[in-house]
Image (tube, rainbow, N blue to C red; front, side, top):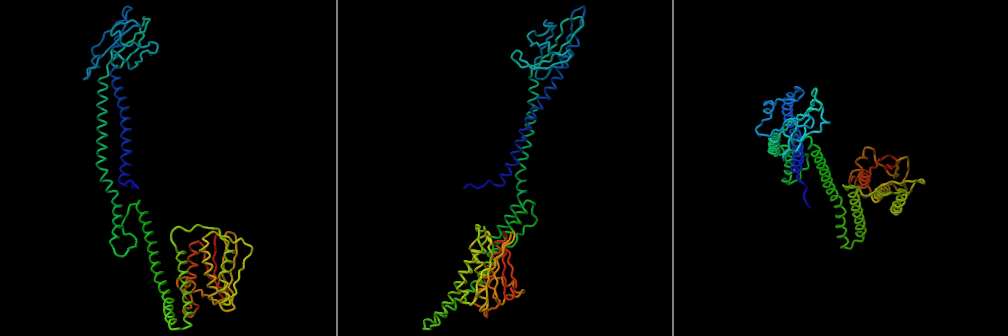
Length: 453
């Protein structure tokens, strides 16, 4: 897979591309402007010579006379030695000048208004200035024409264009010389940021503290803040994993120690050892199951796909799984729900484990002859799932601690457990965007989970 184009090359392309296009546009506009200025300037001189000649045309004794002034032609002299032509005619009759000079259409000429045009004459392109005059007692109009070749015009235009192109090339060259150090200076904060990040690779323990980069340009501040947020999330995840691993190893040490002792007793022929081994195995199995459930509930990244879940059907399934445990504990297990519907969207396995842990706690921490009940209710936009028991409940000041991992409020005096049930419920509820609330059931505990639908 090819790598992406470097940032430096992108900036160079983004700056040099428009610069080259601008230089081309300026060159074209310069060509048009210079050509127009050269044409107007030379036409003014050509028109002056035309006017000087036309003023000498007079009528004497009924005939047209003229006196060609040398100064008129001197005005047209230049370093390129352009050829100068003239033609003076009365109507279609040549009075003086070059007979083969392209004659104009007299009908389109305005009186005493000079007109300029290009034409071909003797294999060369020429510029003609011509004027029509009406003289008294002369029936036909007098047409005066003065023309010159274009070498001087073209030479002047080319010199100005070369000067313009040289100026553009010098400007582009200076920009190219300055653009590289300018890019290096502009990208230096990015290099500094990379250096701060790479410096952390040299440390033995991972440093997940916020980056200490000092003042950053406005464009890099969002990147730095996003990276700091990522580091904070990684720090939280790493800290949670270490704590979870330490707590889990501590909790698993007890049933494993019991197993070792009871296996040793069983080898000596103790009959009660097998029963103790079975209980320790069940406790270890339940602990591992809850650890896996908690890990799945805490799993970071993309949420699993949502499915429509019928809480009433799911509650019946949980009751069928926990009914034997309820009978052995002498606890009545009930479901209170109307016709519904009690449908939510979420991950079915997570909701099942959450409800199963709530029911397990309601049975485990209940009294003989007590009751554990699942209650479902629905209102506009919300569905509530509540598990109520008739056990000792949890004091208000201890409820927050009760939802932490491996928290056992009754210690070793209480029923066997791992202290993960409410932690699983809390983590699952947070991941699904549901609200968890612990309250009094008088007597007992009411755990309510509110889902938004």
